[in-house]
Image (cartoon, rainbow, N blue to C red; front, top):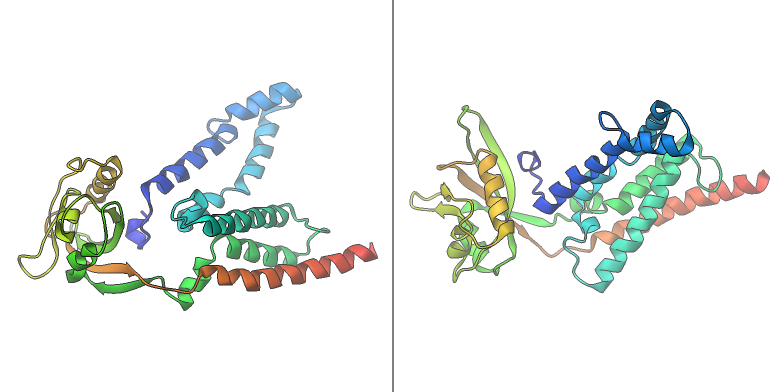
Length: 276
């Protein structure tokens, strides 16, 4: 689903997305086991307990969608100590603001416009790239014919992001974006083909020749190649473009206007609190 919408999602992020909702299912229909356990302890009504738990859970249902788009929240793509501290601090601030918005109370009871602003600021901390990527795109879109050239400049374990297009067995034209970790090899061609995704350029375009899940010695690579096959990619599909990372300004710049916005809301609420 992500690949079909031009979002290349690491498999561990997709796994955690499903796992998160699996945890929420404990006190929501059709499972609701935790609601019965909690009701037994509190001597309350299990149905009412489950409904209240469902209300609380739905306030956090947005969080898996956030870490799908900002995988640094799952510690994926952390470059160093500074990057780790930045993600840690910003995510703590974001979750506190998100809680304040959904509960309708920060320093005092929120007004509607304050709740909206707090939610916007929380989103800016959760996913700064949503705003900054529109100003300074993180990827350069280059021709699919440069696939092997781009892979030549990457080493084993690094990932290459590409767009593949073709016609499914049902006769529907599809376009998918995938993130493929590279296997061992002397050249870019070998690093790609050794993953099990066999690519050739005999007829000019970079075309998928075969997809062979399981030929790589890496479990992560095998799973990714298998997901490409499951998506319906087949022989004859064409690599239309490669998304190559480019040097950009840090997306954390978005935190500056976010702090100014939340500072404004804080000042307004402090003034109102003093009058109470």
